[in-house]
Image (spheres, rainbow, N blue to C red):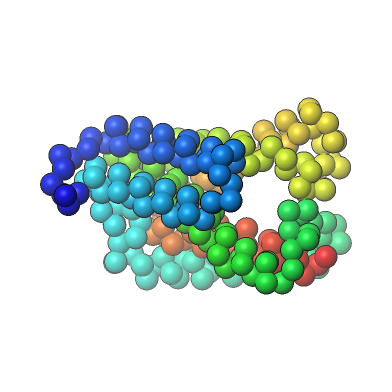
Length: 237
């Protein structure tokens, strides 16, 4: 039966359902079925978009309206260029070069890094997280609150989303381990820091989504920060 024939789903139940789907996806990725991350990302993104449309949403509300794609693409190119320039500067300075070290990618070869940069990051991370937090959740929250409140709530949820994947960040990032120590307390501090950092980053990404009118802008920045970081780390090792 076409979605349009179902009674429209009210905004608040749609929002609650979206959060429940994301909790399940987080557990799948980090506890139950980590090897299925790419499939989970695609399926969950589709489910979330379906919820928004069932609640009366459309592509424009999601941030992918046809009229906003041009502006979004221009923002995307600019943001990728800025991140690339910042990373280049960081790679050239000895004081910041160590920040690119990441044990999760130290053993990867060229083709594996390429897969991570061109497939794993854009599909497994960017597609799901931007569709969820700057797309569907932001759109539903924006119906109920101001843009600022919607951005803050969405970003707090984005920070909480990173609790499980950041549990071993002190081991994965040698610089963080050296700074906070290799102890339970140090690991907790690193995890809390990761949650707070991603929440603040979420506010920036929501601002880009609102300012540009397009989901392409936060998608581009998110991809650039992650993918170019892996690329520079690989080239520097």
